[in-house]
Amino acid sequence: MAEFSIDLEPRIKDSLQTLIKKVESTKSVRKMNKMLYECKEQILSLKFHPENQHHAFLKEQLIKFGIPSNQFEQAWLTIKKVWASKFNERAFLATKKLGVKIN
Image 1 (cartoon, rainbow, N blue to C red):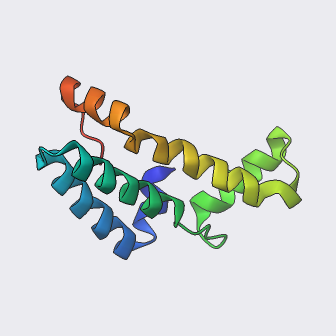
Image 2 (image 1 turned 120 degrees about the vertical axis):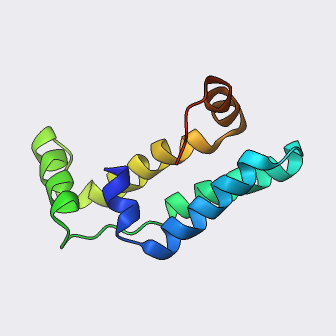
């Protein structure tokens, strides 16, 4: 779902990719944490696009799963928070150590 969501907002996608490249090359922990926070904010700013087939499918499946339709916005925010959690210092350094790309 992440790939489909980020592709719907090219400005955010470009900004996120730029931030990831910068954070991968920084040596300062303070600067790295600031950039990782900005990455999280980019993810959390993603909008839900009900006209998109992937987003429509996600909503349909969540409702089938038992999420009340009037609580979908909270579910969408929670999904974004989980996705954004990969941009914390510990997760970033662990994936970098393993050679896993986070973009």
